[in-house]
Length: 166
Image (cartoon, rainbow, N blue to C red; front, side, top):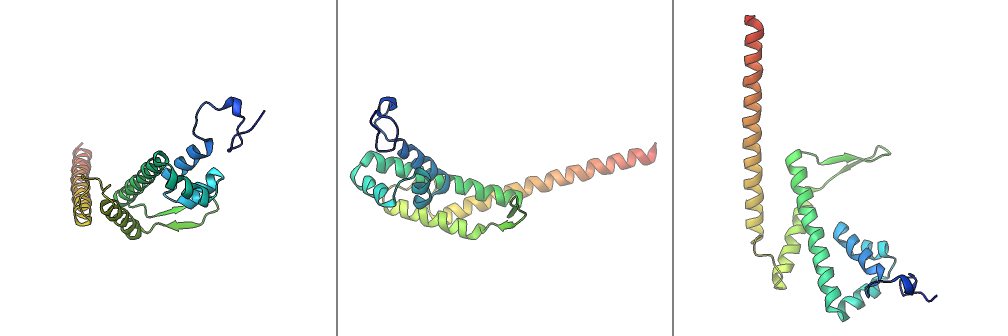
């Protein structure tokens, strides 16, 4: 039985897309790193860049996966800001501190590049718009947290009064 470029038996292939491309695109959306995605797919950087130049469908899928990766980064940064989790500990016990400011600079640079290439997402606006939107979300989150804390304090005080009065 002959084998395809990605090593899969030809008879079992049901798609014209080599399996490595799906692995590459998935890893790219997870990492936003072309180098890491190529390594995960077991393909050379030269080959993926060549295919991107020659195949507009693959180039579009590449861009979609990269955009998804940046969207995931944005969600992760927002989660860390909201939860206050800027450090994590891995299994061996080493601490890893997340650099939130660098993450936002990377997102901003990506958005500016997208807009310059005419692929900017209109709902994000300029860097100042993105920062203002994030600030507004954080302010609303803080206000809700203060309200929740006040309600908890009032409930605790009411319980204390009822315990004292009983």
